[in-house]
Image (cartoon, rainbow, N blue to C red; front, side):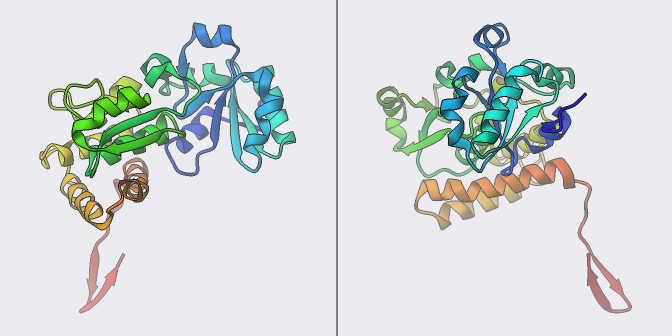
Length: 275
């Protein structure tokens, strides 16, 4: 029987990737985590036994707690979180139920520095246009909500990465970059195994806009136009990133929920009526 303070895998999957998604905390014990090194997208791992010490960090936030089967570890940590003032639920059936529903799981080995606790640091070229906004959006919404991004002079990306422990992306010769006809956004979706159909649709649009192949999706030319407009509106790359997060939030929701909706002007005897 499902707990009153629980959420189903299907409902949680609808929230993952959206700006109003809950904080997702994986509290499996070390043996279970080592035996099954995969994370629900956007979740991060914390030690369940330390919950009384870290629960206060989530005061006032909505949190979903995950363990292997949605049992004692999730229930106990969620109780501590509620005691600390969080709105805490557990994932019904745990990570095993998520897997049984055929939903994507992110391999821990694909994370920068294999850090399941989150807070990764990435570095790329300054003055972003498409990939260098789309990829941070993807990482924050589906991989590591606490990720941070550095924008630096193109020639210094790799050196900054080495000196400051940041993962380079979207430059030639690094792991997280274009591969063949794919752009960096495609590479990340494949490496993180983010097989959400709507996200794959967004990827085709990003690829078309980023590689001048507007025939891939009708929306590619529009994404290019809006992205170039944003790059001219903002001199500060981080301000542009924040604005771009809203752009990609909207694009993802369209791809997931609104591709069949049309907008037209219907004329009735000379009088126009917009839908």
